[in-house]
Image (cartoon, rainbow, N blue to C red; front, side):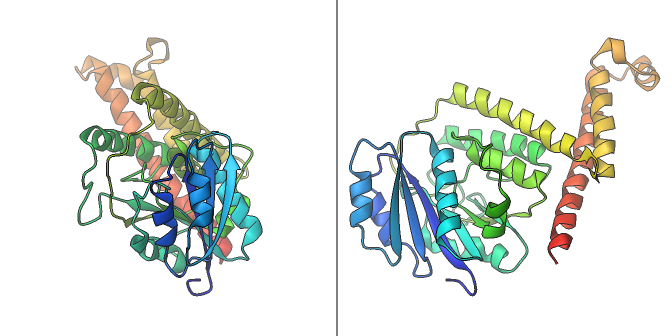
Length: 313
């Protein structure tokens, strides 16, 4: 426990027999329960996990290769039934890429009451993206930009899987609608923002050895990009429906539509015609309105978080 909070750790693992024992046996003393989800491993991951000598109880669950997102969801749901509230659900990978010594710092914003969900941020750590392959760094930077747009707030390291979530968030989560694959962190961030939960970031160490990623870049960016676009629009549209109608979201919608009208001649308005006549390219007009839409969206996100936080007090 940490203060009044129990601590559970969710560990998705697939073919991690070489690292799962160390991951479990180096967990901090304040961890009450570790849930390992063996996602269809073809090696001895489950056996090694069951045999590990950890400072806490270990539960090993089996799934059938449904994906890392589905495994994490299952772990969260198990903790809901196994731990008394309040508790923290910390996600650590089974490959040993996350430093257990970072856990206490990771959960501090929740313990202090300033956040409901905390993301690890490898960029903020003193070593930065230490030993991370160059292509992964570039992908992380690109995804950081698009996730920030979709979530309405700055997210520096969206793909970091080292996270902590308060039990009151898990209690209200819609488990019937989730994302099962590698875009899971992005899906969670957008929908956390949609519900008004406060998101914080804490520095964590980046540990890389010789692991091979199972991600196929073209397929990943196509699927996750479409998912983020859909979830972004769902989030914004949900904030213009009564009874939760945020004024900033209405302004964001107006600016967003004006941005599109700059590229669609049949919808061009008088203001845009005047600007084009003054030699301002339509692309600049569209980008200006979309930038304003994102600015209003950030104000709406902050307002939604304040409303949620005030409702709790």
